Length: 113
Length: 119
Image (cartoon, rainbow over all chains, first blue to last red; front, side, top):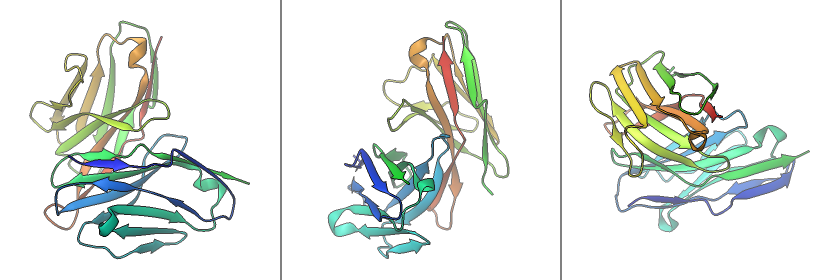
């Protein structure tokens, strides 16, 4: 069975601080895909990144970066120099093979001015 | 590209009535649609998976007769909440699978969600 754990329920930081959102996954398959989504207060899910299990390269996109480590089954997300607009709920998700997408519990991130 | 339009965004209905939620893929063919339910401050829970032209596959614990899913065309999937009750109040989101580069490489695009309140 596949499972995604986001142990941090809520995080609150002051603007311009760096913040890391943790994601730990469980899967028995060798081929799988990991995702991060942002859900602002309006409710829509905004796609941030998709990474397959064969690509362990870290990725950086502006202030966002992702650290994928198969050895620890983790796919952590870091926001550098956080901004108020980054406040949202962030979901990590896993898809194994052609099966459904399984979401973590989500981390509510609040960036205070 | 790969936009899913979901309507209505917000609906209030009386207990005992039915509500239909529509999701349309605007610029691609959505052979598979997923319907999620999200309670306040909780994660997305998959309710069912629908494939165009066939019956939806419901997750364990989801009442098929209460949550009717129709995926009659490649661009439209609907979720009807029948005989709605206050406990059905929730945020419903649809999602379509979007093909990527390889055979198993595909992502998901989500509708903007429907906030249902049953009074």
